[in-house]
Figure 1 (spheres, helix red, strand yellow):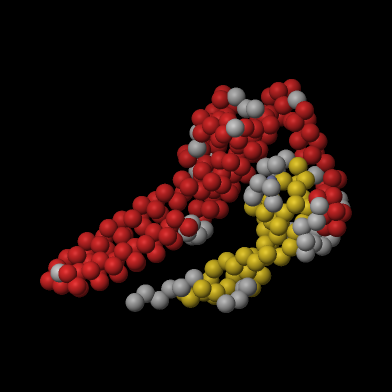
Figure 2 (tube, rainbow, N blue to C red):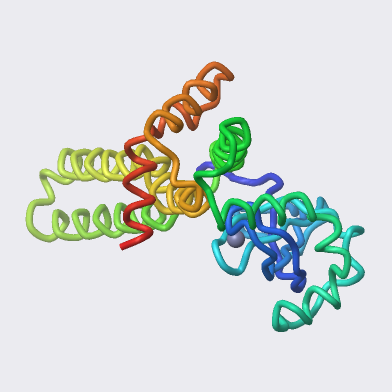
Length: 254
Ligand SMILES: [Zn+2]
């Protein structure tokens, strides 16, 4: 029997703050998660763990960003209306993010009037944000629900096959079980291999589309931006191309 234990990150809700969201390109409410490193046995933990930091998740688009708790006057226990949340938790938001807010306003009003270098900067920073999110996802070993379901399904399937063989054909129990086991293993391996693609589809592309949509980037602009990412060896450039981004932007408008 394999004994699985070690340390893993435990996320607990810690409150709300207002801050600038680079995906929504606006001030937004964020929920705050405390990150603790706790001992686990078979991935089950009993404590919040030793404090390792905090992260914030945009209540609008779901973008997860690192955060420094010291930057906020306090965390709010409730998700107050944005203006109130800003006053309570981050009164200097508009000063601190003056440049980003001004750029977002220019972009909303006349995206095609921005000069080429500013547009390039905006496209690059939107891609970089999601490239970082993809790297982080790949560095962690968190399984998504499809993988967990396939593991549960594999157990149930093997148990059922064993029970049926015991009753119907006990002489074939060994062979039957081996076949069922490898079929299950194959199903779990298939789900594992698709996990990255699911993350791209569910988390990366919608956010990329949301942050790029106001820019209305052309295929050429996107291709060039992906080329720059490729030169930097970023994984995102290998997994996504301009056609998929354009498709995601179109489905956002639908
Ligand atoms: Zn957002």
